Amino acid sequence: MSWINTDYKKAGYNTKFDVKYYEKYNYIVAVSEKNREVLEEVYPQFKDKIKVIYDIISPKLVIDMANKGKGYIDNFDGIRILTIGRHVHLKGYDMAIDAAKLLKESGVNFRWYSIGEGELTNQLKKQVKDSGLEKEFIFLGTFTNPYPFVKQCDIYCQPSRFEGFGMAIAEAKILNKPIVVTNFDIVYDQIDNEINGIIADMNPDDISRAIINFINNSEKKGSILKNMQRYNKQKKSSIDNFYNLILD
Image (cartoon, rainbow, N blue to C red; front, side, top):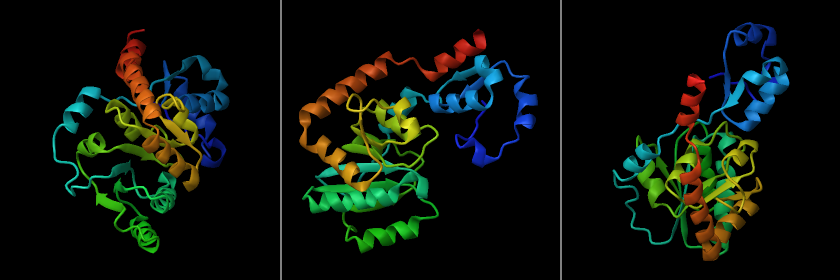
């Protein structure tokens, strides 16, 4: 697999150095359509070699793991929202916390759980405390098997500023969960807005609006989940695409 940062000019890659290796490849695999576009822009001479294969994930493994372990143990009976990801700026946890504050002000009975750790953990915990959300925004830490939490949540939310490929989004889709995501570039490879998820603008107001939309509109939620089931059945797997590539 060959990967190139989408912000190519800032990354400062040496194209002459890269080219001598890329010339030897039969194919250059991009992990998203956006990644493919950037590669084709930077290396137009290799356009015919560039193929898109999303990160390989096993639906069977995700489902099997989701059925193991306890998941939530707090006996909460409201709306469970889950976000998985490192506590770094790109993952947008600060926006999630501000969105949670808006949900609380709107009277929503919810808890928003975070699975992950990182350099901003203490800063985010302070933001939660300062926002009066210590009962509503819960830091769970990390787990070797997070899938029971995904299976048991009511809404999965990915408030990222950027993703290479949203593995947690893909896993939530496999488990057929209502999904709210922000409008980072790559998300459109995974979610069709209002079809198999809701894409919110990258700000707390719109994230909270999208979540409330799922909570209050059961008809839309049902339609989106039915579409997701159909997409999951119809979508050709990445492993099949990989086999087709190497057997070509």
